[in-house]
Length: 153
Image (cartoon, rainbow, N blue to C red; front, side, top):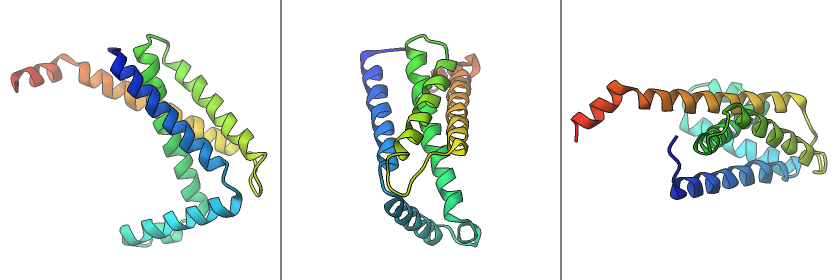
C-alpha cells in the first residue's frame, strides 16, 4: 500500500477516533449502555420493516455492534500496517490487544463485566476487517481493473 504523509495522518486519526468510540462505549455504565442499545434497536425497528429486529434481543444487537466496530478497527490497523510495510497479522495482534483492553475497562464500570465471548467476537471482527481490506486492495491492484480505470480517463 502506498504511504503518504496525508494518508498516514488520516489513517491514524481514524484509528484514534475508532478506539475512542470503542473504549468510550465501554466506559458507559450498564444502565446507560442498555438504554443506548434499546434506542438503537428502536431506531432500527422503524427503519427496517419486518420482525427481524423485533425478535432479536438486545444481546444480539450488542454482539453485532462489537463485531462491526472491531471490523472497522481491523480495516484501519491493516491499512496502517500495510502502509508501514509491516506484516498484516500484526493488525490481528493489535486488534486482540484492543479487545482485551476493552474488556478490562469494563471491570471498573458499574453493572459491566468482562467477557471472553466478546473478546472472541471482537477478534473475529478484526480478522474480517483485515481480510476485507486485503481482498479489496488485491482486487483493486489487478491489471484488468487498473486497465479499465486507465481506459476511462
